[in-house]
Every structure is written in C-alpha cells, then in structure tokens.
Length: 207
Image (cartoon, rainbow, N blue to C red; front, side, top):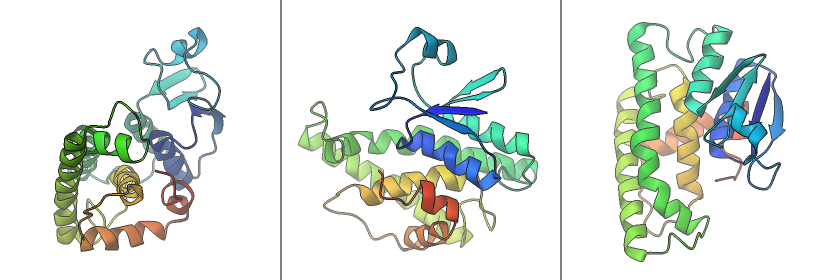
C-alpha cells in the first residue's frame, strides 16, 4: 500500500493519523509542493485533479482524503472508528461532511492570509469576515461537545475526531487577534492530544 502526498499537508496527515490508529503500514511517497512534482502525466493517471493524498492499494487507486479514511477503516474492520451501527455511522459521516463543506470554507481566507501570507488573500475585511465565520462554526462544535462530554459523536473516538482534530489544530496555530475562549474545545483538544497518533500527526505544530 502506498500513500502519495506531502507529509505536512492537513489532508495527508488525516490519512496518516488514520493509518496509525489502525496500525496499518503504508509507504509514504512524498510529493506535492516542496517535494516530487504532481503536475505530471504519470500522477494525473492516479488523480486527474492533481491533488494529494492518493492511496494505492494494489491495483486499486483512491483519492479524496475522507473517502480514503473511510476505506481504510472498512478494510480493517475496526469496530468503532466509523461507528458500530447505522445511526452512529451516519453521525460520523455527518461531522466529516460538515468539516469539509461548512468548516473548511469558513477558515480558508483567514488561514491563507495569516499563516500562508498569500498575496491573493490580503483584503482586511475579508480576513475579518473569514475569521468570524470560522469561530462561529467552532462555537457549533463547542456546543456539541458540551452535550457529548467526550468526543464529537459520543464516548467513542471516531474518524470524525480525526478530521475535526486537525481543523482544531489549524485554528490554534493561526494568529487570530480575537480568539474565542471555547472551554469544551479546549478539553477536547486535551483528550485528543493523549493519543500517540494525534501527537505524531495532529498536534505537532504544523498548521
């Protein structure tokens, strides 16, 4: 099994964290910005979107990080990472989709401006709006954690916590001037940080 991707990428680290939780060995083939180029005909055969990560399992090739993570859990037969019944599975995937479709668009402008310092993201008003929307989304997460008292879908650590944990780390690493105090998120971060795989691939100072 091979995993193509930049080891500092948030989406690649999502898969690396999942592999570690499942104790699955995969060869990491570093590629992407700063590593081997991916804008090549050979890589386009793996992923026509020219993005990482890409998983190759024998003759089977899969892209999109959340799909890769779900595939790995189903392949391993892990009893709880994807939920242990239909409704729990739906909740896990609900929060994974929320992270991709609601949370990610909220933080993109502020992150690209404040961390990456990309010249295309320099509008102060847009930065402020993005930061506000980002923290509004995190208030939703904080309120849900107040209900569960543990992980986002209840007592069990799941794939949803992997994708949300990485997003939480990104928020903590971004120099926001008006960072909210979100106590349930703070306690959640401490629970996640106790996991060896999280220490290796999530809370390691890389945004």
